[in-house]
Image (cartoon, rainbow, N blue to C red; front, side, top):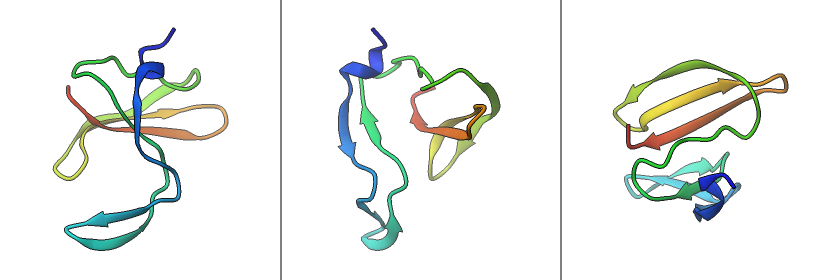
Length: 77
């Protein structure tokens, strides 16, 4: 069983994002909290098209699938 299945949903799709106490618009994803260093398991097969660090998003990975792109943010490494 993938480790993400033990995750806690901390923000659901459609919730309103806030940045610095200001409304930033609709949340376009689902946030899952898990233990530090839990491996990221993509939802489907694909190719990593970008990975790096962003000051606001932390460590991130973008995966291209046959049907679209998924983005994984706030990674610990």
